[in-house]
Image (cartoon, rainbow, N blue to C red; front, side):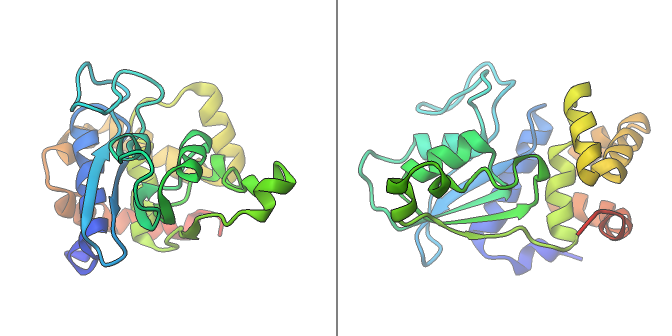
Length: 214
């Protein structure tokens, strides 16, 4: 069951980056920028817990999100028709950076209910309302989208954040996260390749997809 092989290369690279973030103890989110025909310009991962990183990328900071690190490597006043592919719905910080960056289209796999609606900068001012906003494709409302959200939750979740996620309907996912942690499965997952991890989790993703709100 190699569902990832059916995806285009930017999608595959974003998931590879997310998996590397999992293996290195960061928040498992990956992203890449590509041309409209799929040529990857730059890819990156979350580095909030890293103590070093590639030149031009942010690490060891709350700013060190995957999307931020992709955008940080793109030249100033670069072409403005790039596609940003990310495994998780961008947060407010990343959505703002995307709005200012050379991005025409944003594609994301997993839904992040905590940040729903934070991309709509047209509500901020009349000027923003008149400007074209990046096109958005996502979330994927299937097991792959659920996989992307689930892996992003596998690290430590602060109690207040967990409470908000449960209110938003993610209780079944948080319960599964605690089960995976308690049984040592997160460590076993990290030892696999991302395609193997997806296959390993697939039966539970099918059930989880049914339990989450639409």
